[in-house]
Image (cartoon, rainbow, N blue to C red; front, side, top):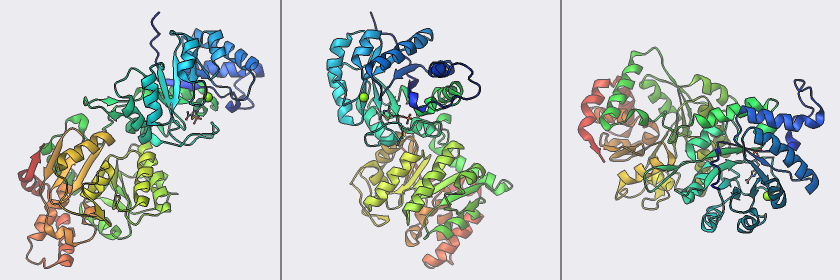
Length: 508
Ligand code: 3NM
Ligand code: MG
């Protein structure tokens, strides 16, 4: 008998101890039937797989709970897994899930027979490889993605990027994958955006579903909770690119034209979009002035307390790793999560990320907490994020001439992180993971003032303005250049971009 095709979209792991207690007033049945009622509501809301997980009960009670749960699941045509207890799974002709410290999957499979489904928890790439080598599992539960109160003796938290590293090992295998640990409506958009792993074939290996305990078990209205989880999963876009232009077919000339159009809109005034910066103390003033000069409105708040409210008002969030502290990183995470929730694009400038372990850890924590739309950095910073040592950073500057093949570096990083990467330097490289181009506007003066990288929020526009500024006869040195740059950003017209930028574009 072939195995049933299972839809893993919403995998509910039960937790009877988490149910609302007492049951809400809307429930009028007997107290001891509340668990089954709650389960049935979750199924009505769209749960596609159930696992019975009972950590503190004896075999007799576990069997009884599982037997009655299975009757409900059978009515909804939803497969039922038993956590750990092979005997109960066999007796009920149910499926089995084992953790790494339970019976080894290959032994469990011997008694379970070939027809039942078998799932295994994995926390590392090595464990994933063993599951593939053994070839007895139908799916893996990858976790914990985030911290959770629900499970004791939790393995190390891996974050969405750790989940992605495991999916990379899973590759094109038929084994399915769900993610578990701290999966909630607020964490899901980021998880779905970051986890798909690029395959050598050019596609992506994505998750087959989301596994939750408390988001459903603790819900007063489990049907509504499940419906919301299903909505978030079912409407996911793999290689999410709403803010990157991929969906509309970005081309290099189009990108320049878009920059010019955007400047045109800003120049027409009126809207003055708010750009929220959480940035370093060195460049804060210049960045605020530059934002104004382009026709937008800067807000330079680093307060974690107002970030969620601000995120409803802003058009864009910029996070900069310079002069970083624990307090600043935690404000950036809160602001980033809120921006994701409110669908506002996030730009990340990983200043000096290659220079110290502290900055590496901070950048990685930030990227695990929110999905950014654009990463802008110099060669040293982009190299550090890409995991390359070809270009070193010293402090916040990159050292040496750059990469042998910069276009491939930015393209690979963009495809892996599923965002736009802009690498600044003598030549700037921009890629969304599919289309990559290089552009050579700019002036040597930009290297002589601090913060020119941090100010390059819009590479094309600022580099064109820098060319105009550098050509002015009153520019004698870094200080006059800095003033002229802000002036020329203020005076820059869309036509200037259209005239100057396309002549220096190279595509790859
Ligand atoms: N297994 P919640 S984490 C049951 O990492 C379980 O294998 C995990 O609970 C693992 O959805 C976890 O409430 C608990 O965060 C998940
Ligand atoms: Mg277990």
